[in-house]
Length: 411
Image 1 (cartoon, helix red, strand yellow):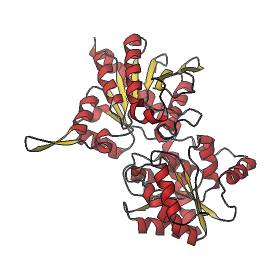
Image 2 (cartoon, helix red, strand yellow):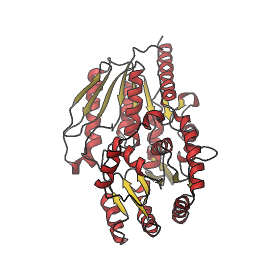
Image 3 (tube, one colour):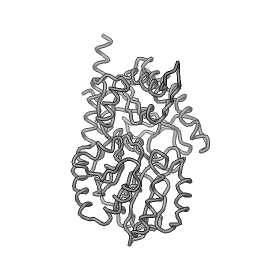
Image 4 (spheres, helix red, strand yellow):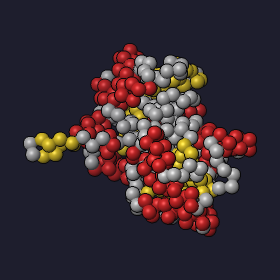
C-alpha cells in the first residue's frame, strides 16, 4: 500500500469543540465517526485534508499534523440562517476549492448526510476525473421521500438522485450488509463497487478511567440524584430519533424511582422540553443540551441503561459506546440497529414504535439484574467485532483498489 497518497475528505459536519450552533451541528454519529477514522488513517500514514462547514468562532484552517489539515468552508451565518443555508454556502465554497486544487489530490472521499449538496459534489468530482469514494452514512431516498406523479406513475426523485450520484462514484462504503443489499438492489450499484465498513470504536481506549471528581461534577451540573438509577438517551432531538417517546417513559420511570437523562440538542429541543413539562414530572428528568464527546463519555459512566427509540437508524454508533462500557441497551428493531445487536442479541430489541413494549423492557431491566448481566456480557463480546483497526485496514484497501482500477482504466 502506497501511504503517500493525498486524500481530500469532504464532510458536511465534523466534530469540533464548542457549542454553536448545536441545533444544526451537534457531535453526532457522523461527526464522531468521521473524525475517528480520519485520526486513525493519519496514524497509519495517509495524508488528508478535511473540508467541512464553517462555524463562526472557529479557525478557518487548522493543521493538526504534517499529514492532517482541516479547512472550514462557507460564510459566517447566524444560527437562524444556518439551518437553511449552511449546506448551500458550504457546497459553493467547496466547488471553488475543487476547481482551484483539483490536481493536488489522488482521490476524494465524500461522507453523505441527508442533504443533496454532498451528492452533487460527487458528480462534479467525477467530471473533473478525480477518483471519488462515497460513504453512504445517510440515504437521501429514505430520509427525503420526494415523489411526484408523472404520466400516471409515481416518480421518486430522491431515489433517482441517489442512483445518479452513486453512479458517478468509484466505490460506495456502507455501514451494514443490509445497506449493501439495498444499495445493490434499489440503487442499482454494482456489488463489486460496494464495501461494508461499519462504524467503529477503540473499546479499550474508550473505557479509559474517568476521574471521580468529573462524575460528581457532572451530577451536580445536571441535578442527577445519587440514589436513583439513570436511564439515558444520547442523540439528536428530532423526529426520526423518536423523542416523542421520552416524556411517556419519564413518567413511568418516576413511578419506578428512576431518573431520565437526555443528552443532546436539535431542532425539536423546545418541543421536547415542553412535552416533559406537560407531564408534571419536574424532578425525574433533565435535558443536558449539547455535550462534547468527553462529556458524553462521563454521562454514559453514570447511566444504568441506554435507550435508543429511533424510528430509523443507519447504524447507531452510541450503542457501541454503551456496550464498550458495559451498559445494557434497549432499542427498536429498525435499520442498522438489528445488525449491531448481532445474534444472540446484545441489545434488548422491541417492535418498531411499540411504546408499551419499549417502556416495559426498560422497567424489566431495572428490576432484573440477571438479564442486565447477560446483555452486558454479550455486549462486551459484540463490540469487539467493530474494531477501529479493522476499519482502517478495510478503508486503506478500498483506497488502493480504487486507485489501481483508475490507473488501469486510463492506460
